[in-house]
Length: 537
Image (cartoon, rainbow, N blue to C red; front, side, top):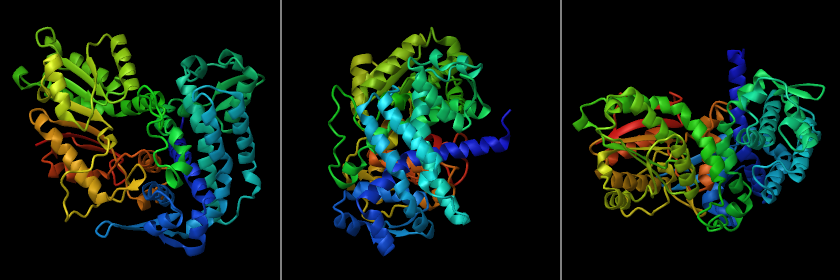
């Protein structure tokens, strides 16, 4: 039985691993181009001047510097009224930059792995991983300092590299079935899982070092620590799925900011492993599904004339959320008792063809009828026409739901802006390398939500949304939040996560207000990076 203190320690390691997956390539890219040396020499820098000096794309450079701020190495000073941003090296940063060269092998491993299948164990990248692991065990030839502050920073950087060693491997194992109970409940031999048992045994030996397995002769047994992480493999999935973006930071920050745009064919995306992303997000979303149950049960327990005719899940991903909602309605509501008389219109909508394919297959396998169609969250009026003309469904008659999607809309310059707006957000936002002011991001969100307002008057808009938090707050709570990973993966891929209070404030401007009875945030503190709300006007 894992103790409470062990769970806290393991959870902290998980968050630090996620930090590392994004921080290692970011810090090393800035080190290679001389930006870190500039801070070493000058201590502080204006973002605009720094971009000019290093011929950098200001938007992505801002994301990168905010990542370092979230780790406590820089101090972000943003003035949204003047639209000015400055970064200053902290005392912790002065220590940290001395060890940024430790990231070299980790960053190179990410780049090298691009040549190989993203979800198969191949010998060439494994040999690099094994080499990185050996140097990691030797602390890259350095002694661990007796000075507590220096030691803390050294361990912080080592935990980041540990994340590069373990994170992608955890996801690959999880997606390929390694964490099935067959392997988790009894001893096993490498050849039972992998066709190259010699290499796989060497990989398992790496996990033995980290305390995941006990090794006896040629057999392996999961430890309680290993089971803890194995059960949370999907928690790594979303961050690891953005490694295609993290490999291209040299280009994104200092070269062609569109390097990942238009490279895909047949609707495929170059910046993210979408199948992995859907797998990871599906696992993560499951933790929040039960929170929306009470809202759905309440709505579908009302008199039939007051109920939605169905549910539309915008950004349906792998279909798990829509499947969950159907099961809740069928088994726990009055509507579930009269589905023959009043069928439930289920609609799954996604912008990505891979997600549509996965969602459709999963819903068919679950024997759930649903229309699964393409749609753009930024164009609800087009979706409404499609539903009416092709399926005789009124968008306004449905309960509109989405999970972690509004921040992922394709950027559109707002038609109307508020010249007096002074954003309260501290986020770093970009579109194709160009920095977008926080004021403009709020204007854009306002315009976006206003487009949906006519279609959610009757039954509301149920949103599970992702948020950022101030970089200084993240830095003060390392190991307690995944904010650094969220900021990096979403910032480099042109997504717009705002702080929870800022998001609600803009929603109110659009005439959408949360039903307080149902409003939740996670964690329930200033560190909140996820919220659940039923918005109504």
